[in-house]
Structures are given as structure tokens and as C-alpha cells.
Amino acid sequence: MTQTLMVEFGMGSSLRRADYTQAAERAVRDALWHNSINLAELFGFDKSAMKIRLDVGVQQPDQVDADVLRAVFPYGDVTVNVQRGGLDVPRPDGDGNPTIMANVALSVSFDMERADV
Image 1: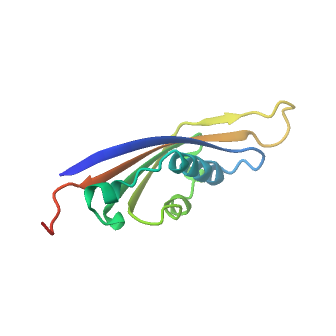
Image 2: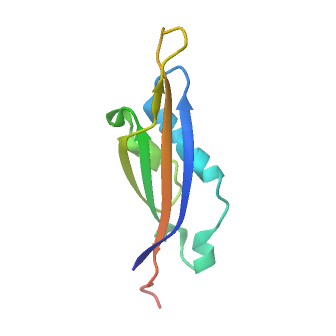
Image 3: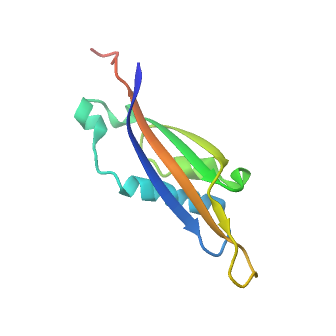
């Protein structure tokens, strides 16, 4: 049985480049920096057994490179789901690219019934 043990949230932005992937990557790193819990060790699992679900919200989901987001995680089985959300904030002067804001929810799960028991 897979059990979700932790959910963390993050926000990231791309101030001038209108880069949705960059904003999402910064949001992932923000979520990771909020967390110092070593869940794998706590439950006696190898870190590679982590199942990570990453939900990303941006205004233009098709502009996010999910492989870049997966690469942020050094271990675990990462599933990336990108959907419409976040914000595109127009520049005050009306010129140039908007500021892109991305939101993420990062959930960590394990199969609690280990095969090696």
C-alpha cells in the first residue's frame, strides 16, 4: 500500500525572462528547502524507494520542461503533473515580459509493505 507521508509547497518566479520552467524549478527548490525530514531513514527505506508526486501550476503548462524539474531530485521516482495555475503578472510599465509565478505541491510517498521483509 502506497502511503503519502509528507506534502510541501513552494513558489518560484521568473522576473524578466518569462521562463515557465525556471519559475517552476525555483518553486521546487523552495519546497525542498522547507523540508529537512529524512523520511527514508525514518522508515528504514532506501532513498530510491521514494515516490515523489510534483504538481505544478503555471499559466502556460505547455511551456514547462518536466525533465528539468525531475533533474532537481537526486533520487526517487518522480512524477510531474503540470496544470494551469500560478500567475502571469504584467510589468508596471506594460512593456516586456510579465513576471511568471509558479506554485508547486510536492508529495512524498512510500510503498509501506516492503518486499524484503
